[in-house]
Image (tube, rainbow over all chains, first blue to last red; front, top):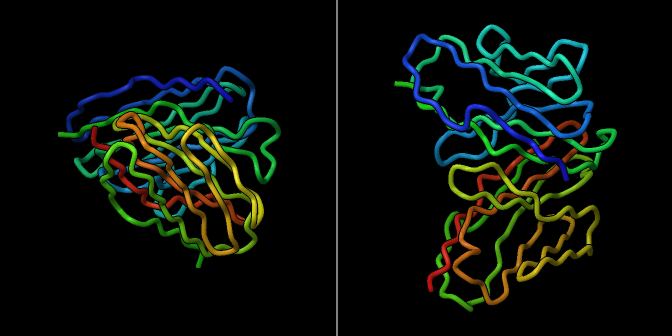
Length: 117
Length: 108
């Protein structure tokens, strides 16, 4: 398995501000994923972050709202911009181990619990 | 449309009372079915991967099985520390899809 850390673990923010969440993995991985989990709901994929290329966003998520960086094979950041209370969620990063084959298992970080007032 | 449905939404068991959680799926080109455990405020913890119908995996009090339409997570003689939300996910041709989970509470 992979050891994945996220910073911060939680934050309370004012509406209209931005928060950058960091994700660090203890091994090199091709793809990193960012998910959102709203209260009482399941995980929704925001985007896939590949090193050396632009992130790929899922339907309903845009780069202006959720800019992502992937400067190397072990690190990524997700920024939640111009926040509103509807952005209150747990944000999770995940990775596939190995070469990201089609049946690789995803491993998740501990999550960042964001509350927007 | 690819879809994952978990049932029940919530389950309360007495310690030692065995039961099963269900994950029904519709997906084009199933590449894998995954079970995760999630504790409150934490990220999902990987439990099992199943690839083909008839496959079974076991870990301590948990056993996962897979058919062409659904998967079961059997919990034998559960303990209070098994209380968590159990998530099922499937990987199809194009993406990973998560169910909404079963919240399990085991009472001492």
